[in-house]
Image 1 (cartoon, rainbow, N blue to C red):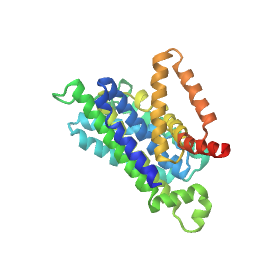
Image 2 (image 1 turned 90 degrees about the vertical axis):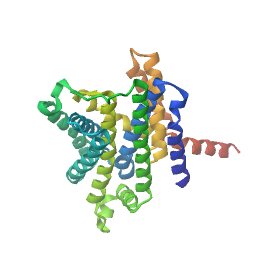
Image 3 (image 1 turned 90 degrees about the horizontal axis):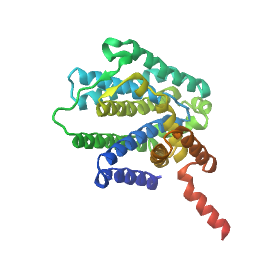
Image 4 (image 1 turned 30 degrees about the vertical axis):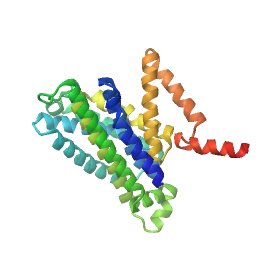
Length: 311
């Protein structure tokens, strides 16, 4: 476990060197890579550690984006706006988790998916605050050039990725992580031995939401314009699940590796098959999941097993 966690931190450290090997394109790609990894790691707290199929990632990503955008529009500094979005996402998810996490299986999945549509409709109807369907313009940082702006937001997203990884490692090695593993194995038995499963699940749900909300805030400040169809896109809920499955469900290192692999596939397919990119990307993902059902994290073990059998 310690080796895998150390390897995860080394991988994140390597991502920080991306700007040294390219210009604005590398910065854009690196920022998206960090954002995808944050979404996947955060989802893994609920989906991997607890085993609850959450589709609420897009809801908190959009919530954090709009919360940060509104606060920036009111004149608050970027760091304070993101921090407040982080705290608000944590509190909102904690309260909602107490209710939603009493459901299990596909009932919880449907409820979490409905949360995305509820928040999207609330934003659409709060036109005075959010601009509704017309979207929200976010003020530019004064005096910053294009390259400086891109570099700043890359390292902001990278710092959030590092914080997310440290949180996930801390949870996996703590009493909370042990309790979540017990719930994943047998929730009924965990309740019978006195584990407060509702509290544990709600804390995990809140931790998974607050980093996603902060990522949404950085994204909103980065692109300077958001609308409900963009930040509440259901793909923000589906992509982290695919990344986690591609990398290895429950493994932080596997999840980040899956996020990087997904982005690489997405970029290559988009460049070469722009007309049918969605179909080609879908076929590649299905093939990977079929031939590597336990994700990238299981690849080296499978290779070692084949070599042992051959010997």
